[in-house]
Image 1 (spheres, rainbow, N blue to C red):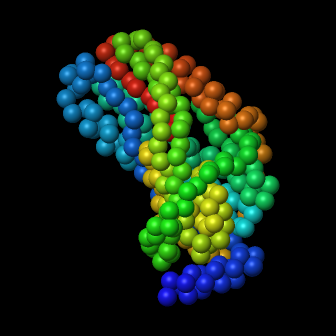
Image 2: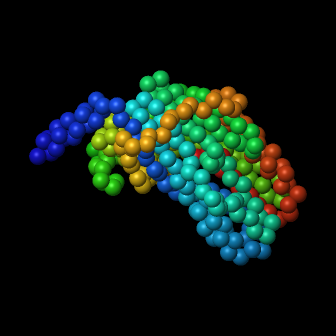
Length: 275
């Protein structure tokens, strides 16, 4: 019985892939906050940690859309009228690094295996041009349903270097930590494109859910061949940089901003770069 179902799935997939098709997937994101206040701030502001964590969870609950064809896609944040602001209370300010702005656009060209990512950082626009990220996925065979789609599980082990910047009593410190974590993705062969939300892809089907240990992205709506398909345009504006150079610039800008708050007495801020 399993063999018959598998053969039927292949036939359906092949039929869809043989056609020119387009689609639109809507994703919701949820991210763990990564910050820590010093003991002085915690003592003088009881409950401030819990309050800020609750506000940060709302900030990282975002909606994105992925407009795609077989060979191209455009991923961007849905702008909200009343977007939550970075929390601050009693002089305590938490700065967020690495979050996607509502004007950011990630363009992928699957046939040419390249990306063009327009990002705004502290008022300046950058255009990150690079190759598609190559994930050496391990297919587990485990399945689950997401909406009406049967999805298959894939895993990839990530080893990366995180940079943490702490500021206590006006002193800025930088710490590098190497971490390993498991990237888990759920894809459906019923939509036979090697694509997914954000930078993710490389599987034999559209990724509907992904978790990198810090952030979870889940597809909430999927429309194939919409009546009014959105035109996919590659971003062209911004200073052209590589992914590595943009990471360096992000770190430099974060340090600059930290320096501006050195005069704040008694406030401890911890920022995680990357992840």
